[in-house]
Length: 93
Image (cartoon, rainbow, N blue to C red; front, side, top):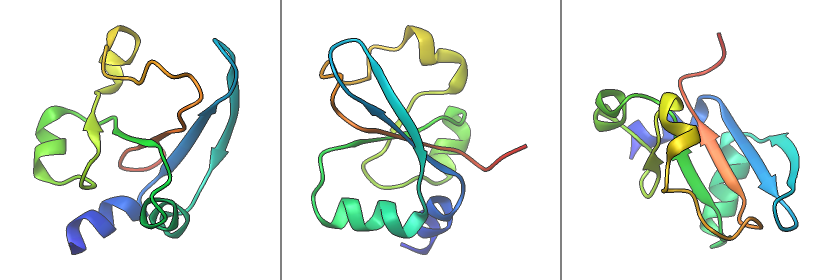
């Protein structure tokens, strides 16, 4: 459990999609805010954008791995554009 909390405390970003085919605003949230959303059962998809090796080393339970390089060609994102997406990685550079 401590490992995913550490990962969660790293950089987290929410891309809220609203409307059909229209991107909404990008909102930065804290680890505590994401945990509250997950605990409340909010419908969202958590995406780890690191390499498969880094993902295997530790990730937020229930998150999916879509490395940054594969983001444009992935089929793992939800079809419903209204589903909030939470992207996280190892932090800012």
